[in-house]
Length: 295
Image (cartoon, rainbow, N blue to C red):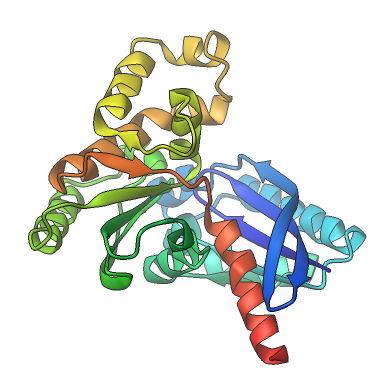
């Protein structure tokens, strides 16, 4: 049996098709196919607060292609979510209706709180010590989701309009940054030691570049060194010399700045990077939805 997850983000659109396996009382999934299309919807959404005809057409074509792939792979169930860019686009709901008509895909535009909930439903916490304190840090193109856990329980969670595409387009505001700093200071004050859990395409790439062994955490010092290393190259050389994808080479710099700011304000010295994202959380949500029905 196969499930599919669609994530329409500000930088890229993703389709994950996963194989579902039942083992006695547990259900797990293995990634079968992952397709990533760098549409950069945020460039329109954050500057013009509307998706242009060109971006809308590209998104519709992508969704039709995703529908065809899901049909060929005989996907039993799916969920499709759109995040920050579609939230801010005035024609977001209209485009979602067009996707339903053209691709027969039910698309839900979700808020930051739900986005964060889906991401940490990917069961990252299974591999960590529940007695400790953790701050989930998910950095996307249009928003940053922060969720603080203590003793395995959610302590505080909030979404901020700070993201990599938004920063590149100079659409982040000092008010948003101050709001995020205030949230961090207020909610992390009671805890002496907090570890970070970083999710998102950029931190996954940074972790790979750091070449840490045995799922070791990424230290603040190592992240800062990576930032200094990356900024020593021009955008062109980050693509041609370092081999970064064109749509990763620019956003990775503001991503570093967001993660470093959060770690510094929250006094986080180490961050675990489980290399999961929204699509992993969607698959897990589908498993819980379908198998809880059966039980």
